[in-house]
Length: 360
Ligand code: NAP
Ligand code: ZN
Image 1 (tube, rainbow, N blue to C red):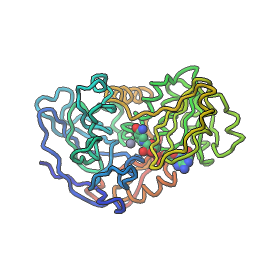
Image 2: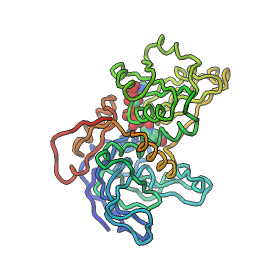
Image 3: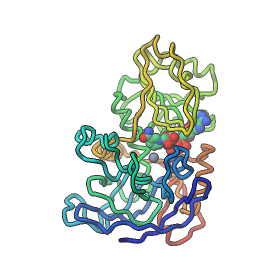
Image 4: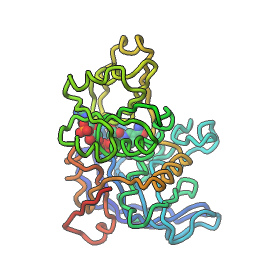
């Protein structure tokens, strides 16, 4: 067993604090990774605070993990010590159901194993990336092809990147398509960058007037402040596809009537409380659809990482030491982050007092 420093929540009301967890020694198919950076996803907060009512404690969140391989098992073929590597939201799945066979492990019919919080259908807890070391089966480890100096900005791709890339690809975002992105947070800002790089015409919908200029800098062709009814009215029946990344319950009808006939709004935001049910006439009169999408499979995650490396895309981040995590959660709840906190894991060894900002 390998003992590793970590940060954990011990209950839904306790702040995250230093904790030690054990990792298995690498087996023949395992890769051992020294974690260098870990992004802070809103799902980490939902889980640490048991907002989805399924949290196993102690809870060590973190599923936007990048680091360096330090050891590999003797059957590992595609990684060696010294390589950069990434791990996202999953560390295992059954491997034989129809979804796994199609490379859609996130929809594993027997339940994938989350990087934290264990198998989705229940089982032993797993501990995520707010820690120094991780041991993961090779088939769930990703190659990082960005320059090493961009590593911290690559971390958020492992969840925010794939969770937006996958539905944008699935619903055909590209040239000639008008795509709406709802919410400019961790997911939304990657969604804007990726949809733009795919060639779509991108309209950002934000509740924050202060994010209009950033929205354009990040790649949106147009920005609409969603709390202004007259701005929203201008987009009625205009959009082919909407990706809704909002982490709080809200009125979906405000966006549904922006879709063209046969348009789809896909929800990736997973609020603790349900959205009010959309009005049925908004759906039936134009054959519109509301859909959902969960992260993406391992093959597609590698495709997304390679796409982002090729298009020089990475996240806009604020680097934090781990002892800032509880403040970071409070700021995330106020939409006060541009646009992803990333933990510098060196701070688990040496307490640090400063933060750096970096963006692309
Ligand atoms: P985030 O960084 O907090 O961003 C959420 C954004 O939603 C905010 O920046 C804000 O954008 C908007 N927003 C927040 N509260 C709002 C409200 N009351 N009304 C309207 N807009 C509001 O969160 P994130 O990390 O991107 O995650 C977003 C959601 O996706 C979370 O629920 C997370 O758990 C979920 N998630 C799902 C998957 C999946 O596989 N489906 C994967 C990862 C995360 P503006 O300021 O621009 O309005
Ligand atoms: Zn996430």
